[in-house]
Length: 195
Image 1 (cartoon, helix red, strand yellow):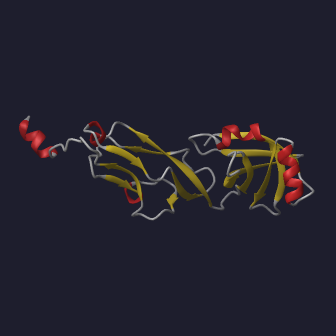
Image 2 (cartoon, rainbow, N blue to C red):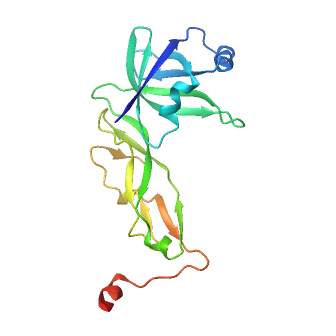
Image 3 (cartoon, rainbow, N blue to C red):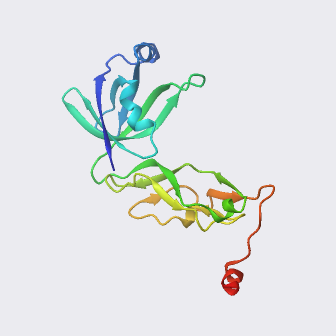
């Protein structure tokens, strides 16, 4: 898993008034949980660009003063109108202690159902994954080539390696819906028989 270096400034004054002042100065207030004590810090908004706005899950190497910790994003808050990053909660990676991370889903291939005029609908863009530090995938890649109209890939269809998916097994990740003008294709057996 790739990591992003973040240089943070320790926050000693806590509370919404001080957090507001940090945001006005172009910084994002953050907290790292999971260690001996929570670490409150802030960093410029641009420092989080490679961590927040990406299709991969990444580890943050946060340096505050003389301390450097590895952490993953637990929760983010955005402004409801401007969509500006307002706050990030991190969870510290501790050797041997499992953590839960949101891992992005990446689709590969061209769905057979879409080629026949169906409509691809992505229901879950991220999956909740629990694992030990170092065992996380950067993303979960799904091959959608065999999907026909009316078919779906569910959480139970994903084969996790070294991690556990916490979403319900019946939850649909991606599906191909019928669309106006779509052509239903025959079964594979009929295709093989024709050949």
